Picture 1 (tube, protein in one colour):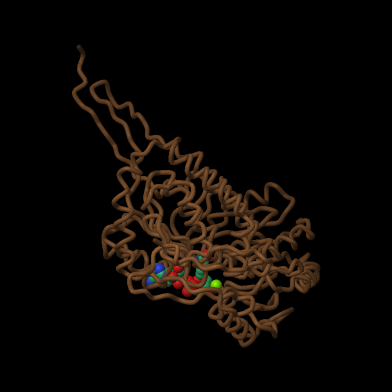
Picture 2 (cartoon, protein in one colour):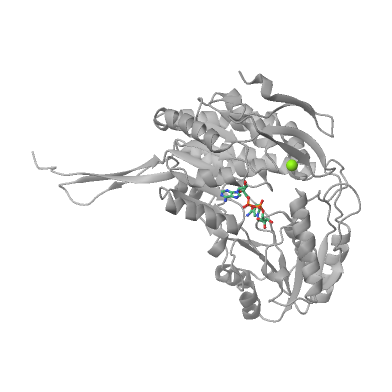
Length: 495
Ligand code: NAI
Ligand code: MG
């Protein structure tokens, strides 16, 4: 069963592989119940790659059945066994790194270099959580001589996970790693524009020997995500995506079975250059902060604030760097970034650029779609903006950034905080006490000092305010996947 759902695909760098297209349920790739499929597109040339099966409500139910059935045995499995499987999965991903990176570049459009970086972090994340599997402890609580009290950290059950298209494989690892280490079983839905790498990962999950039903990976649209969020037998939902959809997910959880919710949502992260910064380093970080991954990054440093005394220098340096950061084919070494992931995103971004011009912002460089097949947008910088403009307020999710001058620390903090979001922030200064004061003051879940977009499996990530709730990666990433049971034994008397 299942082998008929594989299709041979050849990537632009000549890797030929078997792409699973079925729904991964109970360790088998199966057609959807309706038999419906949808098309997967390569955004670098608008070519059709393959069709994959589309999960709808009935398919989610089958996946939940599978995950529910195996839950008790998986939850009671020796922790070291769960750790071993995660560790083997990390090894397997490392072995398949080249094909996984090529799949990601083909489906999402990110450059091969960036895709390889993602795969490296995916390996780290699975290894990190493999190490945690046998270190999940409760406490012994001393209350009085007549009682013995302790806590256990238990898994929740079947968890639903919904991921977006900007880091398809990486975000699957952020979700699966902690859920599996702690003994939950999973139904994960990939994003409709990038389902391929998660299906390839599913094949590796099976190969290393995870029991059937522990990991289920399905492809499908938003309505299938909505069904997961409102499912009565799913005990927790972890979502990454837009703030608007995050609101739906939380509401669906509230009106169904009050499942636990973690959300990693949008951002409009400030990136601040002080007068005493090393300007070369700062401007390079600013470039990485906004053009990395075509600007399709939730924590992108999309609002740049520069101290007035170095503003003109930064404008000059950054403009030159932006103009040397041209996008191109993801498999070409000279491409600084690739296309946007879909036509919808391309159109959204171009719309924001038009709004910016209409609102009177000055286009320092870029601003246009590149005249070729595929969804490429020039590196785009706006100056002469004010805090009320749409391009300063709203998440653009593309290679578009605004530059603003400031005079004092208080002024820049006030501008930094003038947002509904609070995902990340960046600071550049050589002054340690200023760096710490500003880092402590910023309303953001992550603060980068003299670096940006700098992720590590050991370091937790997750937003303040409307950028979300809960953390991923780090030891904090485990919290959302366990619940604490308190046990209290009475009647301990003297014998
Ligand atoms: P989205 O948030 O709608 O999609 C993300 C995921 O949620 C996909 O898997 C989608 O199928 C699923 N989904 C859609 N509607 C759902 C619902 N009602 N219930 C449950 N799941 C649902 O984001 P979209 O439309 O792809 O992108 C729109 C904007 O969202 C982007 O321009 C960007 O600003 C932001 N975004 C932020 C991301 C982040 O990393 N924080 C990632 C992707 C998008
Ligand atoms: Mg695609």
